[in-house]
Image 1 (cartoon, each protein chain N blue to C red):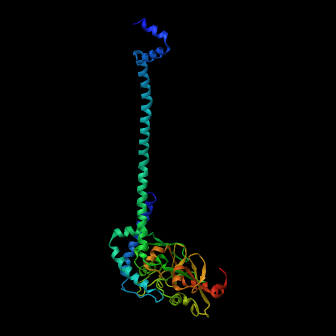
Image 2: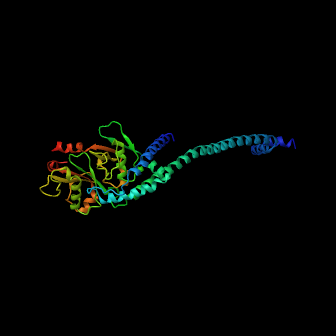
Image 3: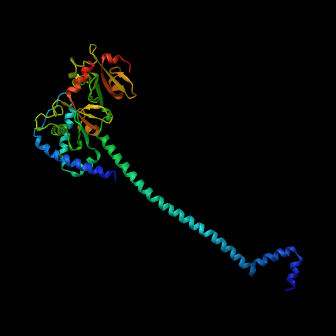
Amino acid sequence: MNSFEPQSQDSLQRRFHQDNSTTQQPRDTTTPFIPKPASKNHNNSNSSSGAAGRSFQGFGLNVEDDLVSSVVPPVTVVLEGRSICQRISLDKHGSYQSLASALRQMFVDGADSTDDLDLSNAIPGHLIAYEDMENDLLLAGDLTWKDFVRVAKRIRILPVKGNTRQVKRNE
Amino acid sequence: MDPNTPADFFKGSSKFHTYYSQTKKGGGVIDLGLSLRTIQHETYLPPARMIGLDGYGELIDWSQPSYNSITQLKSEDTGHQRLAQGYYNNEGESRGKYAYVKVNLDGLVVGRKVCLVDQGAYATLALQLNDMFGMQTVSGLRLFQTESEFSLVYRDREGIWRNVGDVPWKEFVESVDRMRIARRNDALLPF
């Protein structure tokens, strides 16, 4: 009983914080559809758009939010070079686009809503990657949104140049 | 009557025994019998009651926490099973959670995930991997081509690294655990 209470309090705080950020997103996101890069699977785009529809329906029901939030804990977001981390509840978002918008608001000062927002350009010059249960670092966007929410343990934002230098060193 | 009784007593041993038993049944013997019986009752009743009480008390003390703990365990198991079922139902693919396979290009920090169920052959897999990693190289991956500087290897369920393309596609899909795009020089090294 004692162990559950602080967790519920933390989850309540996270939910309150995320609710604020979530309410802002529909206003910023005015474009109905944003095409994704060709490199990503069609299944991902189809399922993510479907998930987006479901998420909006789900927002109206608090009971579902409570049930889901008890299952999926908040995820730590680490920006390379910064010592202070952020936390984000993936269950509050229904698509990669929603996540990209939230990350942009977190890390880009004076960020305005962009029509062509995606994970690849959410934070200029950076890649959005995540660590899974096996501590492997993978680029976000390959999985369906549902699978991503289930698998992602931590989100890392890495500079693109950093990824490229690794290649140069080996060459 | 009186003179006859002592005469019998002194004369025969058998009569003596008979007389003794008769005396037991007499008034004096009645007291002895009652006292013995009373003692027996006292020795039997208290242990029986104590045993009964002890057993009943122990049952009460043992069953309550055990019942509570069993109930909690059952509820926890049920919740866990429901969660597991939900997760598995969402996947709904033949490979289940193995539909997506991790891929790493040598030298890159960030890996990718490929859905093998979407591919139908090695050729389509090569195309998708080139879409994912091709921009990181000068002339593209050009996998499965003799002049390519890259070689695709995979780790099977038993942890053994093998060359991609040696076995039929279906067999490969069922056994692959993760893949690695290795440079030719690295690929020659033993694992």
